Image (tube, rainbow, N blue to C red):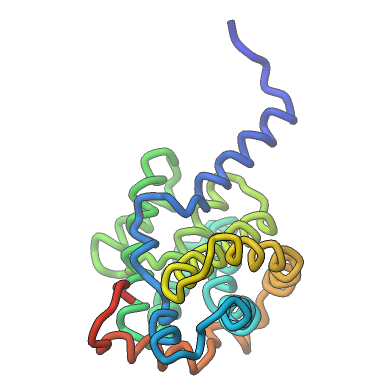
Length: 238
């Protein structure tokens, strides 16, 4: 017995694909990276619920919005336009704007692992060519680029894709902060509840990223990420 595909079922399938793509438990190793947060905690810059909330808010508004989030949007557009050269150019740009070595390497590892999960389920010439570029070391396959690429090829909504990406990033920061500070789990949930409207605003601003701001990040984060490479003791790889 076959079930007729209706618009409602198609919409639910798309939601399922988006949830799968943004699932924090995907086996790509995201939980191993703090993005410099561990240094902020060791230096007592982030030390309680309020300072963790402020950290996540700053990352969303001043870093992710112009950096990884912008690259998700641009990669999505390049994929819709079937432009491999644009994807390769974005890959170069991401590598150049991720100054801390460990953050740059971790983004490449996460992207390649994400691609390994989803590529076998997507039959598309653009994806095949991009994978070949990675194999030939003409691209590294950074995480935000792969996220936008896969979302576009799956036919997912751009705004919803960005919301899922930002929410996934926020969950990672909050989870790591709760563990590092440490805080109670309810404190982390309180922070996440307070972020929904902020994430929606961030999505609205990054649907069409202003070119003059693409790649911008917070200097404090880059400095702490570089310092993280030389911490005497640490739980995270970056």
